[in-house]
Image (tube, rainbow, N blue to C red; front, side, top):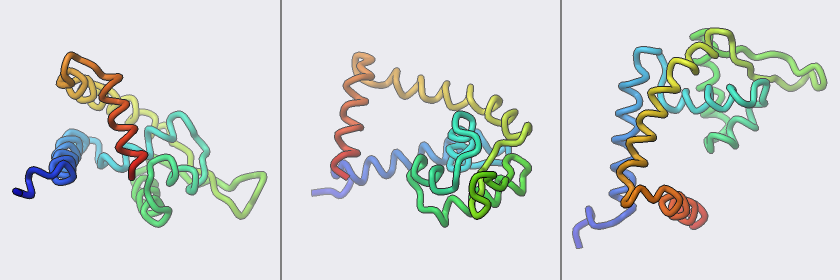
Length: 138
């Protein structure tokens, strides 16, 4: 059997291509696709902890710490002391971070619509169920 016949190989290759596509589209904004996940999460969960962000974007906390460091350096997020627990930090979008989210949203929405249009019969619910089943298996 040819390794290219394995779904895991094909899904990985597609995932890498998608990441390259998004990274190229997001390069003018100075961010990567992975950083955009953090920004999108914060746009609806501003003031989240590092732990909550890591769980939401499904990355390890040390990886998210590095992402937050770079986003903070770019002026897109700030770390603020949690008034309820001074040992904890809350991660918040800056006004510039909100601007970037607004600017990149159409890019991500457009590509997501392209993906949905490829699904046979435009059956997005079935595709979504298949993705969820695959995710549960892992």
